[in-house]
Length: 446
Image (cartoon, rainbow, N blue to C red; front, side, top):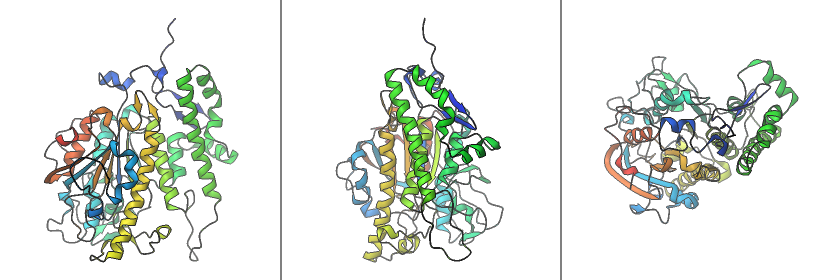
């Protein structure tokens, strides 16, 4: 008698907990998604990672087009994954330009990055931008997963008030827009992201679990034991790796919660539930993204490392000045050096994420092979506030639909939304255009 296939939507359930599963051989050669897309074994995942204030472009841009060999200084941390990268030069976010609206380049840079729409200049409640590419995807394929999309970040931001030359703060702290008037706030607390991925919403069960200080794995023990017992050797290994990753994240969050507090001014309460160390905070968020994609909890994510115009300092790098302040360097070599150090730090976190994705076997390849991770900024040179020739790279092969290991220069003024349109196609989302897109980007194929 043939053993029935395990459903791709199977959840291990317990008290206030529902843990999705990674892709297993017991789910069959083709996933449920592949039935809708003949010839594809595993679904693609799509993530957009945003960093603020542009880059030190001479040290970001590879020296020549074609095959990636020696990476420039800012990208050096990605050397082990260079064959999984596509660096794109020449893309433009035209709707981040003033077009008569004056100052506010930082607000426009983030608001226009994924929408391709000119944000309305207002610091009131009458905000307007456009539907972002991640939400276009979520609206078409979100019903296939537990969460339509995931919005996370490394720096909190205000959803009200004025932040940049007459633009509402929401524009410079939110990259994801469900509609032209509905921005989606990001979650910056790893604990709450974890609960969203693996906990049932609300109710006394979650409170009881927290009070007992138990792992989510304790509450699915019976289900997981039965599953492991009936699995083949390869699936047993995958399940062990997956459950171990979940537990390691829980332990790291527990350690972070026990760390001594910061010396803060009177009347200011330190944030609870996230590490004081920024690098550890970003890496925990990277781990959340990996788990979300590995378990197919969602196939769409946005991750804002820091808000546009962020003036965060980086004392661990020896950079005590604010990032935004330094980005207006006026060609001062020492300020440029510090900007480059911040740029390298951000890319190191990207390298951590890609290494995690590449280390997870999935089907005939890795989880990274079935991802498209777009990383970049809506500003190019932070000193000039220009929005052409953006620093953009794409990691992952999109299920074999992206030719990586290359630096490609597209014609000047090519809309960055042409790239977004092309990524949607690889998610089997067909839309006429995204924002100011003029069509798909043929450069993704060799």
